[in-house]
Structures are given as structure tokens and as C-alpha cells.
Image 1 (cartoon, one colour):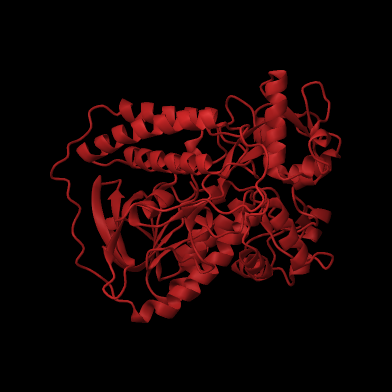
Image 2 (cartoon, rainbow, N blue to C red; image 1 turned 30 degrees about the horizontal axis):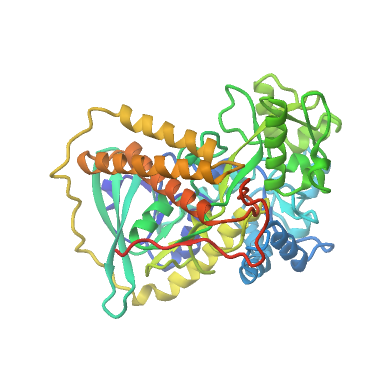
Length: 549
């Protein structure tokens, strides 16, 4: 059910921060074990899941295999994937898809594509009926999708199920401020016992007690000027976990999606990699194809290679964009496979059945995050992280297309089982100290927030982007340290708002990204620096440890 924070009260068993695929999956899987509360700082739809076009990578075809999917993922991750985690995720991929089918997600079937007039919402009798497409880095067709709006189909189905479940409460307009922790008496570990939450309707901060807390807040691509992500991708979960004492890893690996629609009015509209999987070509303004010069796989090379190639050609030619061309395919084929993209581009005067699509790279996915195990556990007891907020070891130095949604489901399954097994023996702390705002005032100069926000996103794009140098990174480091001091001072003196909370988190995560990038003295995957163009022999993860609590 949906409710307001006032109606809900201040106690729950499992508190999930984030209402995308990861958060809703965990809610549904653990709801029979206790009361579940899901927080969304905006509209429930305003997460990355709703806008995901591509699909879910899973081994379903007889010609495919778990070993092949694992090998492809390890190759894309350029030596930094944790093999045991990759094997765990892939081995559970078919089970995740089966669960989604049982929830009612209307995945595209072979029959639906062959007979477009038929209803694709009928129950699927077997997974072999699903239509599979191919994306960059994959050696087989293994992407399950709902035409080109998979995220929307998954989100709407899971949200409907969550609303119907009597043990799940969905709260909109609630921004998590900070995690509440206390020392464990029997160990040196801290335990998460709740969260301070800004009720945007009342502008008051309230404490919610919980036996378990899960961070499912997505990534931090809003740290960059150009991004495919919705506005809420400000790294909130990563920042809160760091302040609570959690390690983070591999924050230097920020994936830039190669193909975001280049149009002055098309804010953050991604052109799915599946177009290239179905034969679309990347072209220069004069019509010349160029990807073969950079990789033998051409348009189906991993995203880091494609994004760098586009960035190189744009800088070499001084052009504003390159072009994605699928007009050589039959018009009916294009409209049936990519109805969302076809219609959206048409709104901007581009008929993709006849014309090329102008595209540029944009920040898309945060491959690093809060360190977790296969069950989503963090360094803080009773605190879990799932989805893009986390670092499980699956993605390595470069996420392979459509592995991210798979990770959401598999880790959520593991976290739900782990929580359910411990909930009966975990006490609820209900004497949390109320939020103190006796020494703060309302801000009378919000322009400071918007100015700092703009400055961070611009220098992150210019100095910590697709191609880096030590000098650029050091300049960014000096700027972020000054800005973080200013933002910290502003935060201490004023009542919190959604905007200054996001700015506070984004500035912290930007500093973590810069620190991680400076530590990696090589070029690998998504981290490419002109000062260290070669790869070192024995690479490791970049692990940052927060100062003592």
C-alpha cells in the first residue's frame, strides 16, 4: 500500500531506501517475514529502472551456456571481476527471470514479434518462448526484454505487486538523511538501527527505527554534466554508507553509455545498445563507419571502447555528435523491435526508419560502490546494499550490458533469504534520539546550492570524464575539497532540504571518484588516463576506507 510518513509511523522491520528494481524485489521477497517499508525521495517512477530500455542478461538458449556468459563478463571486466561472484550471478540468472515471469512481467516473446497483433501479456508457459536479443560484449543472444522498455515493464509489474501486498508500505517524498548506527556490544562492528528521514511534505526530519536497512538508491551519474540517469542519481546510498563506516571500492569506473540522443530538448534520452545488437551502424557526419578502426567487434565492442572511440572522433573532427544508423533495416522491423525509441525520436522530428540518430556519450552507470558480499551485507551489521549502490565484484572495470538488472534480482534474493533467517532473533531499537535542528535556520540564499551543483558537474565532466590525466584529476581534487568545506558549512547552519542533501552526497561521492582515479596508475576498462596508458600486470580493486567513526 502507499501511505504518508505520518500515517506509517516510525517503526518497521525492514526499511528499504529506494524504489527501483532492487528495492522492490527485496521488498517482495522478504515481505512474508515482516513489515517492509520502501522509501522514495520522489515519485516512485523516478529511478533508473523505469527508464532502462535494454533488458536482463540470462542464459536461456540451448546454444548458450553459463560458462560462455561468465567468460564474456570476465572479458568485459578487464581482469577485475570477482570470478566466484560472476559465476553466482550467472548461475542464478534463469531463476531470476523465471521469478519475474511469474510476477507477470510482460517480456517480449518469439510469437509476439512474429505476430505483432497478438497480445504479449499472456502467461508464458516456458522460458524458451522468450525472445532474446544481443548486446555489446555478449557472444550469444541472451538479453530478455520487453520490446525496448524493459525497465518500465519490470517496474510497473513489481510496483503493482508491492502495492497489493499487505506487509509492504510505499512512502513517496521521503529523503533519507543519514543512517543511524550504534556500536555492537559483543564486537567492534557497528550496527544500523534506523534512518533519519526528511518528510518533504512537512519539511521535518524524523527517525525511523528498523531491524534491517537496505540501500537501493542507485548510482551517482548525476555527478556528471551529461547523463542518461534521472535527476535522483546523486549517490545518496554510497555517501550515507561511507559516513556510517562502510568501505567503497572501484569508484573510478564510471560507465559512459556511448549513445545518448543528441538534441537540445531530449533530456537524458538513452538509445539502447540493442539497436547495435540488431545491426545499427555508428557513422561519422559524412557517413563513414569508424568502429572497425578501434575494435574487431565493431559496433558490438564493450561500452568503454565504443564510448572512447566516439569521444576520440568527436574531438578529432570537432563535431558535436556522431550518428547511429538503423535505416538500412526494414521499417516494420525497426518499429516492432524499438517502438519506444521510434516514437520518442519521431517527437523530435527524427524518423529512425529513414534517418540517422545523432548521439553522444553520457554518464550512465557507477560500477563501484558500497562493498558487499553475495547476500548484500555491508561492513555495518544489519545494513545491506543492492543494485547500482553496491560493489559486488560482478562488473570489474567495465559493466557488460544488461548484467546490472540481473545483479539487482540475484543479490536481492540473497539479501531477502539472509534477513528472513535472522529477523526473529534481531531486536528492534525504538529509543533513537530525535533529530536536532535547534541551532539551524532556513536558508535565504539557495543560489549557493545550484551554483555548487553546477560547478561540480562541469569539472567532473571536463577533468574526470572519459579520458583523464593526472593534472586534470589533481585540479578536480583541489576544487572538490574547497567545495566540500563550503557545502559542509552550509549544511551545518541550515535546515535540510532535498536539494542540499543531494548536493552534500554528490560532493562526497565526487571526491571518492577522484580519489579512486588518482590511485589507479594504469588504464583499464572505464578508467583511461593519458599518463598511464598501459595496464599493470597484477591489478586489484581500489578500496577506500572511511575515517574512524
